[in-house]
Image 1 (spheres, one colour):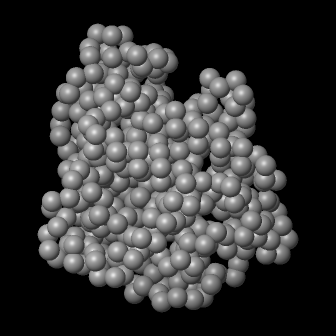
Image 2 (cartoon, rainbow, N blue to C red):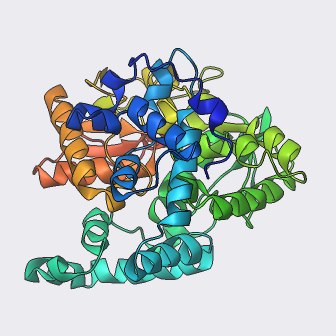
Image 3 (cartoon, rainbow, N blue to C red):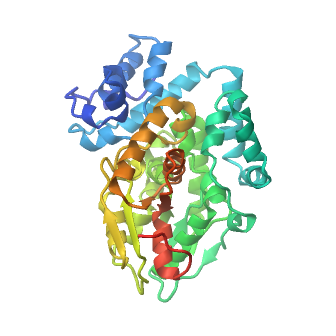
Length: 429
């Protein structure tokens, strides 16, 4: 049970520095809902001193895997690896009832690994939204009788873009001017169908900054959501496929615009360390992965940049700031755009409650954190929130709508794209 966690759990000296930075401990105040308490549970499970009871499952499942504790840990405890191992053990021993297993199979096994099926689902959901069915379902209260996690899932459903914005990008997009690098672009699974415009904006920005962009058509899901959900074997399978696809492309770096994907892909070396065929390849691949802000901030943005009259605040996605230790680069990029005024956000690096599929599996705690994030955003007075992760965008936007707020939530690449394209309506400053 829980093999391979001994080294990690034994690094914890139980100093308690993590307590003040853990969102669930801050909300609940219980030791077993803190990183230190959960490490004690994981250690006890690994040693066979306790069983995987309902109570243990509840405390471990409430963890966001936001990794804020890693940022402040003086002992270098690899908490993200520990909690993922624990959640994998939960799925192995306690997979749940038929409805839960069906939901996970449909999403994690059927839809996410298949771009074709995701595209069909996206078309159906867009019809649901545009035909008036969504308004009817919400107005009649039908959502309240839907089973399982469907009501929470429907409430978070963003507006699906039209089909032309979900079309695949060209396989190779030449650099604008002198090429300085060949960059692979992960278009993702959910990202490709829900936030296709973000991928297009990312490609444009990369080419304008000297990158020849390669978009392998055979790519798909990187496995991040599977790892967060405890589906370790499937996550490993998808990691191998991703490595194969990008190894076949002549790229110097693999650029990612979704923070959870980037953090997960940078951990492929650990995920596949026991695979003799992929261990070295996974480590080499992970060293090529770069977040879009990390990649662009290595040198000043190429101009010219058009002024963007915009007052905004910035939310740090957990898997950018804690998972990849990227904090200053997004702010550095925003500071180079004429007209952008950045108002700092209180608890900017606190989880918004999205956390992969956490807002579906733990809607009550996710809502508490969503509301906390919303209060801090409203306190800035900024009409726009900028962030860098699709899950955060969905979660924060839904929370602000629930408060009746008109604050817009934009991806960092959207703001950069506006500075380059000189097009599109500008949010009021």
